[in-house]
Image (cartoon, rainbow, N blue to C red; front, side, top):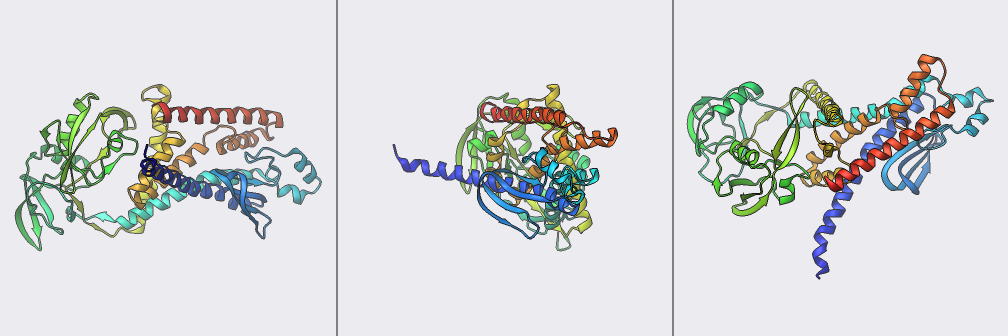
Length: 449
């Protein structure tokens, strides 16, 4: 056996792990910094800020008396405040008893601070996750800009087949004899796409330097692979962005819609694809998989999919977006992730969709590596999505999570007294058991779904 044959696989494994650690470390650092800085502003002293668990690799103590450290297991982190017994903010009875004699010292503990300070400190972690996600989405929207109106060609994709008479800068007036509607009007565009004749080449009417011309070009929606979904049939088969699927089981393709129809009607049967890549045609075989897709009405629909994202035969030209417009788009994307996540959880609980949609650490690591391999923007966008998911998860009212602590504080606000230490210990044990069970379940999904 050739040992060197394992080098590419081993390198890919290291790349996946490194991508996962980087993504998780950024998200955890922002989350825990939210707890730390709001706690400090609220007068609560942080004893330890740790990135990772286990043996300490590096540490230093700052002027505020907080020890900042990096630990050997980079799969989480914590802030230990004065009066905490552990990373889960359990009460250290001995430390609290020692501080009780001094009101000023008691005020600096997590459990002796006013309710508002404790609530703000706990809520800050998820809030910082949401804010980071919104800022990332805003920066991406600001850098990408908004599509020009009318729809204008920015750059042409490299496609096989007939010569392309389209040029960058052309404004599309008509295609296949149909007037081109506003690209951002989803209903009008969908109707236009359905009526568009599936011809190759396709006639276009364009405005070029103030003059209207009729030119021939590729079909508007070719079977072009603009993106590959991680952990999908396409990813496993080796499809890459930039590929063009020219035929399925020997049947030539003109449009992405033809490909979609063949995939949906295959009913999971193995398909043989002829893929054009950089001037050469390669053959690949893959079987479509059932996928639960979110719908505009908040529900989910199960479809056969191979896991690719299509697009136009060109990249549309853009113009600068205003900061307010970009911020609105970034904030909306955070809300969309939250809404889709909650809808997915609801549908999994009711059995409407498969629980295999819940990924564990292996699935998240594989997705991290796949998104990193598709470029910096894809990876950073993935970090924003994952950060939103982490913030949302931490708000669930489960003891041991931030939402569980907020639930205790809500009880204290209503009852006028905190729950008993014994009740908190029992509930925290239950919460930890729930979290560990969920992690094991998700890990089982990674291994067996």
